[in-house]
Amino acid sequence: MLRRAPHRFALVASLLAACTGAEIPGFSRETAPDGRTIVSYAAGLPTHEDTLVALFEIGKYVEDTSTIFADLRDIAIDGDGRIFALDFQASHIRVFAADGTPDTIIGRRGEGPGEFGQANGLRFGPDGTLWVNDPSKRALLALDRDGRERARPRSIVPGYGYRWAVVTDTAGVMWEPWSRALSGGEPDMEATGLVEGRSLRMFHQYDPTNDTRDSVNLDEGSFRSYRASYGGGQVGMGLPFAPRALMALDAHRRVWATTGESYRLVRMNLSADTTLDLSVAESGAPVSEGDIATWKEGLTDFTERVPTLVNDLMAYMPTHKPPLTQIFADDQDRLWVGRTMPDGDASRWDVFNSEGEFLGVIRAPVVASTFLNPVVVRDRIYLVANGEAGERYIVVAELPRLGQALR
Image 1 (cartoon, rainbow, N blue to C red):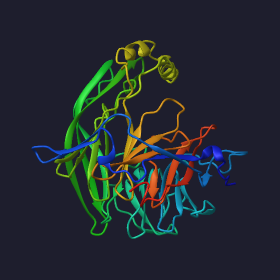
Image 2: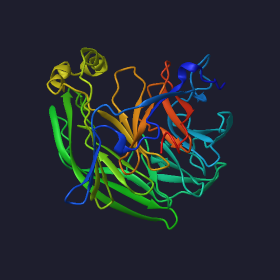
Image 3: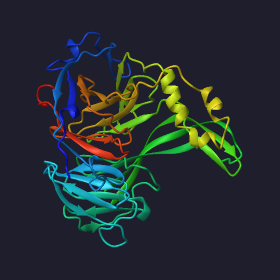
């Protein structure tokens, strides 16, 4: 049963209405000697709050488990506003009308045409083709709107991923981010301690119009992680509250990237030339005792095997959390920057246009899942949230009039 969202699931949109960057205190814009544009903002970006009511939810646990997703892994929206939701465990796609009404189910587990193994992502091409990534088949499935398979080219990247991070540009070319370890990635099952190395970030591309493929190298970056060996195995994990390097591509092939250490993003072209440098003078919140206690609770299963794990990792505990959690571009090439929020606080995104002009803040009614970016199509936002029963569900809400509040 589809439940309408009560008022407590209102989408709080904090928006700077009809305000240009030049009108924001602490804003500056200049051209560097190398030609890049430098855009900077002081802390405390001004906002004006409006409240929007979510239109509906899909897959949230209410009385029974029959309507929830076993493992919601991706969502995509077609030209009619229909919602396609990929359930990884069930190996099918549940389709809903634009108003949230259940429509149909396409796909099933199997080896035949239109059947999935371990599909982990969906994207629509400009021509309406629904592309399904299935790493277990090492293939992309090209489906029509009714789920009939048109083609099955091989996957874009040679490997598995929990989610599919592909972006489709205006020409229908698909771009999938990838990285290759240059150093520090050598396996050593006897090792315990910090692992440091460097990797090369890149995009693999696939053009379905002519069935061609290519790769574009961007830049090098560093990584740090921790591993601990014990009798019979090894534990590997990231350092506590460590910043994550983030990268996003918009439909016009502009790349946004950040190391995650500060509120600073660069816009690059696919030749790795920096064309814009965007920064906001804000840092992440301090790491609290409560944060540390919650972090320790999450390590319980591992500390039974590696008793020294907590003490070892505490040596790398930072004083502040990273300021950013997420970046993505929407269907109008606006940049959405996810902010680190206190535990339990609703998710927040700062929104900029492709030239770094601040447009406003979107504040969600729920803690949105960080593993899957929200989908913004036309005047709607589609969020994936975590329910009290451990399920992932979809929250759909309208954005303000995009020609005014977000312009």
